[in-house]
Structures are given as C-alpha cells and as structure tokens.
Amino acid sequence: MTSEEIGELAFYMYESYGFPFDDTIDELTNYGWQFDKRIVREVADAKFKKHQEISRAGAEKKFGGHGLILQTGELKAADEKELEKVTRLHTATHLLHQALRTVLGDHVQQMGSDITAERLRFDFKHPQKMTDEEKRKVEDMVNEEIEKELPVTIKEMPYEEATKSEALAFFKGKYGDVVKVYAIGSFSKELCGGPHVHNTRGMGKFKILKEESSSAGVRRIKADLV
Image (cartoon, rainbow, N blue to C red; front, side, top):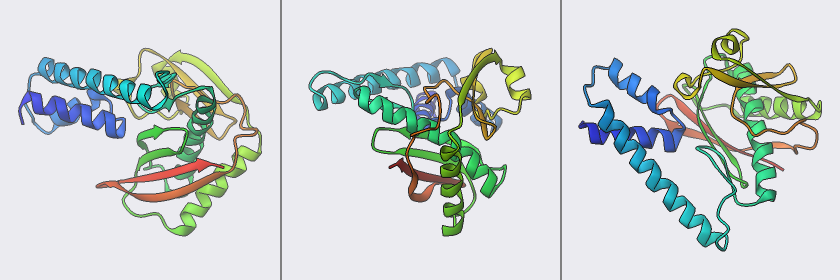
C-alpha cells in the first residue's frame, strides 16, 4: 500500500470504528509496513475535512439550514431535543461497556461507537456471537444500574494517574496529558470527553435492538433507550 492509501485507511478506521489515527499507524508499523507518516496524516486530515463538509451540508439540507449543534467522531445531534437524547445514550454506552465486560469477560473493550438520536451503535472485541441469555443479562444489568439513580461524576487528572485508578482507557493516542474520568456510581469508570447526564435517573429503559458481527473478532450492538 502507498502512503496515500494508508492515509485513506486511517481515515476509514476512525470514521467507521472510532479507531484513533495514531493507533492505526502503530499497528501497521508493528506489522512492518513502511510509509511516510507526513503524507499519511495529510491524506487522512484532508478526507476528514471533506467528510465534515459533506456532513454539514447534509445536515443543513435535512434541518433547514440549522445544521448540527453537536458533531464529534461519535455523537451527532441536530437540536436541543436530540442533544438530550444522545447525552443519555452516551451515558448508556458506558454502562453497556461495563456490563459486557462483567457478563462476557475482561477481554471486551470498545472498538468504536456512533450515537444519534435514533440509537447507539457500539463495537467491541469479542470472538463470537452473543447468546440470547448473555444479551438478556447485559440488558438487565444496564437497567438495574439506571434504576439505582446513580450520580455521574467527573474528575480531571493526569493520564497516568487515571489509568492507575482502574479507569477504562483503550485509545491511548486519543488522550492528552490531562484527561477527564467519568464515573457512574461505583459501577463504571472510564476516560471520556462527555457529554453525560448528571444522574441515571430518568434515562429510560435500555433495549438491545441488534447484535451482529462488525469485523473479524469484533461484534456490534445497536441499542436504544425507550
């Protein structure tokens, strides 16, 4: 592959799975690929900029010129109502992540997510299809935590201190020297940029809509709060 093609791949991995640019580069380097990192980043940045422009244009067309009030790599909202919904769904992904690790094992880790007002999509490492019983256990666990009306707290701390506190962190290249750690009661603790609810009270009932393969060794859950 050329450096240009690797730049396109790096963008695809970020846009589709939320996989950080630096992690893609590190993985390819570990496998012995040789390329010009400057060219790779230029191509990836150019495609990301074009993607933002297309997304903005589509949103303006769909929402009468108002566009999106929130658009990150994983969160999208067109207005205050949608922002409230994606905020609840974003908090639910943290509960889902921990529930999956509790039910399936500590090998589970987030590989990417995409959240809109219609649903959350969560990709995670797991070698096989989940059973109906496993899905039921995960659903029940998430809903049990929501019903406890847990406070959601945030602390800023150095990255090294955060990882020593047992906060989940799998995208090392994504974080700076100082990070935000979100804790949902004593159930979930994870590095994240937000936004999140202040309390799980009133989040709604968590429901898994679909569980399917995303790629080799990666499963995908689509879920909603109803």
